[in-house]
Image (tube, rainbow, N blue to C red; front, side):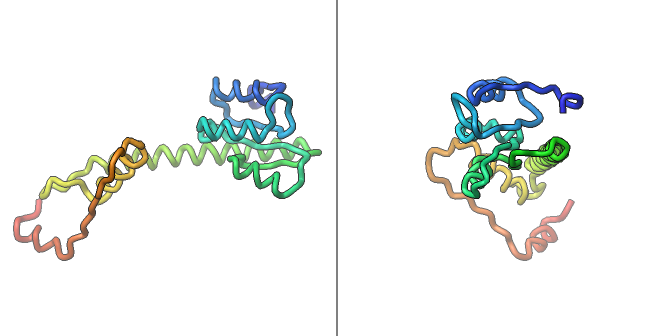
Length: 171
C-alpha cells in the first residue's frame, strides 16, 4: 500500500485518533488490541465526533468471537479482517473499500446538489414551494436540529388541480 498511498502509523489508539482528527484520510486500518486506547474506544470516539462519516475504517484483529466482530461493525467499521492475514487480500479489500467509499461520496454530493437545485423550484401559479422543494426544506430544517418547538408541516396533494390551471391559464 505504501506505493499507492502515503501511510501514517500510530503506535497506540490515542495517537491514531489524534491523526484522524487532524487530517482526512482515504482509509484507516485499525487494530483492536492497542495500548492507551483500544480499537473499540477509538471507533466510539470517531462516531461521537462524526469522523467515521468521512473516513472508512477496516478493523484487523485476531478476535474471532462473533459478538466482538459484530461490535466493530456496529461502531461503524466497514470491514473486518482476521489475523493472520494475507497481504494481497488486505490490499484488495483496502482498494475496494476506498473505491466504494469514494463512489458513495460522489453519489451523495450529486444527490445533495440535485436536491438543492430542486429546493429552489417554486410553482409559478401559486408561488408555493414545489412538492420536492417542500420536502427538501422540511428535511433540512429537521436535520439542522434548530427546531426548538413543535411544528406542523402539511403537504396537500390536490386532486384534479389541472382544472385550476385550465381555468386560470397555464404558462
